[in-house]
Image 1 (cartoon, rainbow, N blue to C red):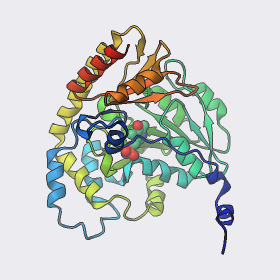
Image 2 (spheres, rainbow, N blue to C red; image 1 turned 135 degrees about the vertical axis):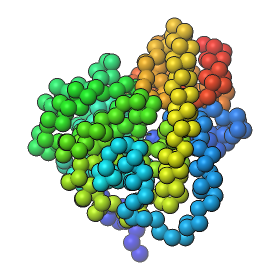
Image 3 (cartoon, protein in one colour; image 1 turned 90 degrees about the horizontal axis):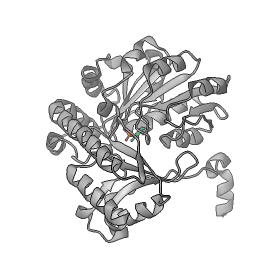
Image 4 (cartoon, rainbow, N blue to C red; image 1 turned 60 degrees about the horizontal axis):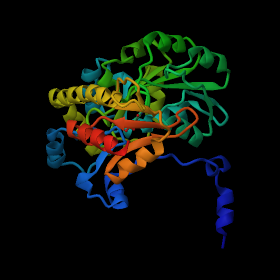
Length: 364
Ligand SMILES: *Cc1c(COP(=O)(O)O)cnc(C)c1O
């Protein structure tokens, strides 16, 4: 019989060497680990929507009669609804199992082993993750101190093997936008420019309308954050027509499951309610910014998204992160070369802000 070692020799060596992605843990796991009842857990670590999905989504999912049938591989109804929502023709739109799937699909289409992908850290971890899986080579061009992207350094790093540039705007975890002038400068290069707008609805800014006139611009969006559908995996992208044609060929036919399609469609029908929760989150973000700003041992960065990045100036970020956990409050802790002693706090409901501020006052 073949040994486990021999099986490992059959595997792709570059994938065996890959670092695992650090995902956020679900509430029940956090609850068990800390012995805090799940309903008491305050989860501010995943940029998820504290108001949940629309009640109409729950109803539509309960009433849907066709779970036994495969969903439409061309996603016609959803793409039509997204046409109305985005103002761009459905021909430009493809839905995915979260925008994470679309990041992977774009890389599969463009990146051959050894091709380069530009990443601007600190930023979303899925770009290097999916690049690694595709055998691409990540070229890191760090953001400046104010977290703006370094366009000159990006341009200098480009060569024949550079295929894709990823820019999250608003950026996760820093919350800042990349201005249109800089996006246009990147579009002048011979690479694919992916603007990841996972938090667009909290900023009111989008580059989507630039897609039809640029054959190298891709804009990614998601229902995970603003519509509260992170658990159902529903994202989409706006692509130039020449790219749509090939992505449609290489995507799995049933990549967006029926429940995700039903939920996305119903969210778009309940848009007024969802806009009211976006407004509540944005208002709460500003209140949280003010409250956190009162602590002289914290530096809080302004944000156009549904989270705030804080530098902990007294060197106790790790302790604070742990102490908050013992009180049932979960935030994201960063300790990377680009982000030393930082916490990222997702915006919750007003009572979550109050609990967090009270806990921080007890700890420090
Ligand atoms: C959360 C997030 C996503 C993931 O979106 P899904 O649609 O849930 O896959 C994509 N990009 C950024 C920058 C994010 O923070």
